[in-house]
Structure formats: C-alpha cells, structure tokens
Length: 134
Image (tube, rainbow, N blue to C red; front, top):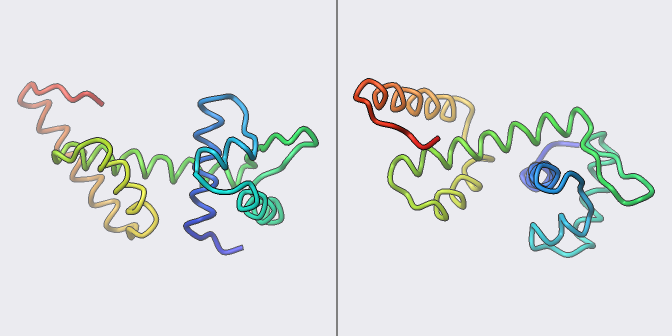
C-alpha cells in the first residue's frame, strides 16, 4: 500500500485518540475526523491488510510498529509546523489547520529547513532572555 495523505491522517488521528483516551475505536475515529463509519471501516480494512494496525474482536484498534512510526512522524510534523506558524504570529486555529495541510505535501528538504530556522529562532530568543511557551 502506498501511503497517501488519507492513510497518514487516519494513523495520526488514531495515535491522538490513543493518547487522549488510552484506546481507539472506529466510532471515535469517525467522530474525530468527521467522516462516516463506513469510511473508517474501509480505511481500517486497508490499514489492517497492509500491516499498519490490528483490530481486536472487541473493536479496539492497535497501531502496529509500522503504523505507529508513521503516526508519530506525522503528529510531530504537524505539531512542529503549527508551533512555527504560531511563532510567526498566526493564530492557533489557523496554524493547526494550515499545518495539517502542509504536513503531507512539504518536501523533506523544506521541512528540515523550517525546523532549522525554528531552532535558530529559539536560540536567538534564549540569547535575549525571551521565554518561549513551548
């Protein structure tokens, strides 16, 4: 299975739900993503078939190592991009929405450049005694 934006979003959201609630169910994924249970059923079928998740008889979803790695990478990317946009003065809601769009399409080179720049901003802030809320 070629990992596409939709699959990345499902894995990322599953990780977020797991972190918030301790367990992941299809109905929670549907609710959190604003999609139908049928859409979640189709997505989880593909993710299971490709070794990213398992589903127990009780309906609980477990991220397998390959799925967890993708989910963690996407969540980290999302959070870092959102923090960067907020540091530029973008309001939180817009930054979170824009980061979601950017996280999938931004090249690794551009993402790394943003990270280096953001790290440089933090270093400059600390040199001048500016506290960052991160």
